[in-house]
Length: 163
Image (cartoon, rainbow, N blue to C red; front, side, top):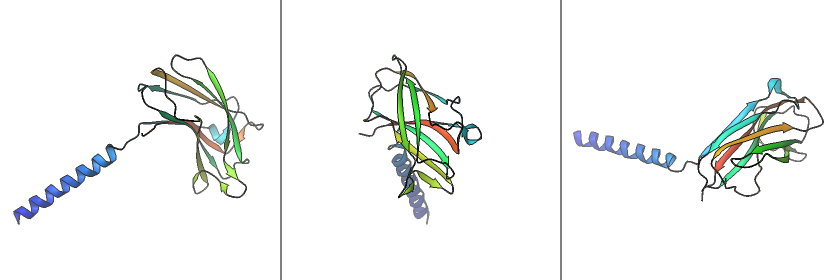
């Protein structure tokens, strides 16, 4: 009886260790910050700023813009200026058109109830940071309508590429 108990405890410890290693050993370093849009009405003058640090300059990264909106959003897309300054570099700007819906498929993001989230890759291929340090991204909506209603959050997500 005692041997069965010891065997069961030992098996539980081994299984727990394997589960922990399985989840911990496959992690991808991720940074994500989303900024709430006041009252779900994105004024042009409201420009969320996202700041993070990069320390590993040997890795490749994917950089995404993340958006969350409700089903009441009035357009199939959103246009943004993504202003960014990377360590040791000058301020740059990238204009991005993010599709949010398709006339045949409906909303393109992942959804729950009436809220949808979209991640749009803004680097054409995995990116390697030249220098470590602080990265600053500023998001500016440049749609004709201001305030742009029913946008809940906007942000940046950085994922280390698994090789």
